[in-house]
Length: 467
Ligand code: HEC
Image (cartoon, rainbow, N blue to C red; front, side, top):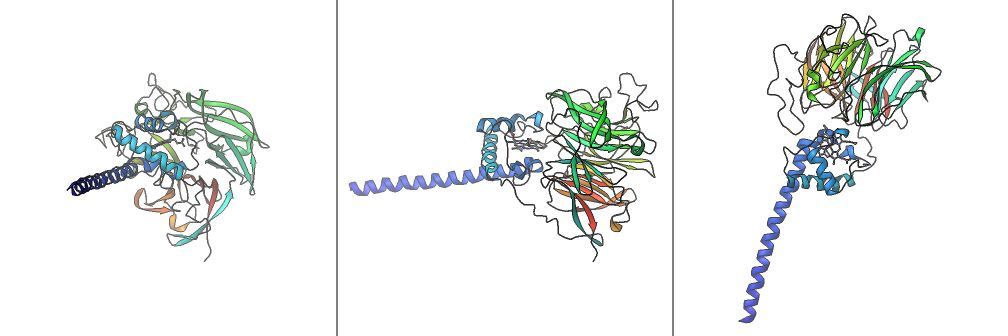
């Protein structure tokens, strides 16, 4: 009797334990699965599907459960990390933090790119290969420009400028003090149209009194024998801020010699609608920084006189059509809603009053996608590609691509081709999939297209192959 009673108790206890562990396991898989799902929904666009952007991670704010939870909950504006308190509860945040800590430790430091540079790519009736033209340990090659003699200038976001002459890369000295913070650092480089007589180049970079008070500056200098001489800052965008995002800043000269440049809204959305600051705007100045008298807001009280257009989020692609005298721009939207625009004098492009995207945590920024007095994009990308740059193919070297736009994609690690019929987008192609974040794409004066790629840290030339 006693033994059978004990047996009965044991049986009950073990059954209960089995049920308990079964339920717990189910619950755990449910949390693990939903954490993974939440990750794919909210985080993967910036951090990569398999957290690959965290390779060799140096944590900025620490990797304890407490630190990482706080990063996810409140965000870290200085490094450009948005917060998720509105859409995840503390339990989900803690589960996400544990997931991040465990997964980041497993990310291989140097995963080889699945795209082989020597692969022959077929597109639009022709084949091409990539030819490496520059780059040894360039962490983030950002700006590309070409001198009249064919030499290439390439910036590295970490604050270096190089000249590449017949395959040999040399460091250019004499750069100003550059703040490297979040998305900011040394960005664009531009060659003056009369370089042969004045030796002038222009650079855009993050700059400020302290690393907590920064915004974009533009400086001009003479490039002589590998050195920048007579460097002069001609623009400093205001207000400074602690934010590490949306510095812009692409530049170009139009056919009349005006200098255009883009500044992002620096993470403060309403900056873009406020004409009394530089942020979220495209600007137009003379090559020495002076303001043309026919700029659209020179007579508007309080307005920054260099503003050409406004209502932009973070414009990082500018392409100027010299023949038609038309400016094309692409800009980073929020989650969804990256835009391709034609930029016109004095116009408002709507951010954040109208947008095709939502905030990173999924909350609605605006219910409106259109409003009277605000411009519509020519095209918008959903999901976002993270457009870093923009060029249009005019060169006869790439017959099947003529008239098409190419944008670097930071989110999909590829080159995004918009197939155009006149000024209408009629199709799309993802080129060089998984090559790495494409930071810049330029059709150079030699007619070839050059792409700057992160991770491999290299600049490639697209060369049609002879079949
Ligand atoms: C809009 C892009 C963006 C999205 C979306 C995003 N992050 Fe981030 N996050 C960043 C950036 C930028 C950094 C800084 C990267 C760096 O320093 O290399 C960062 C850094 C982090 C860090 C490291 C902080 C440290 O101390 O170094 C964690 C953890 C993190 N993100 C978690 C998440 C999680 C979890 C999600 C989704 C719920 C998410 N992020 C969504 C942009 C994003």
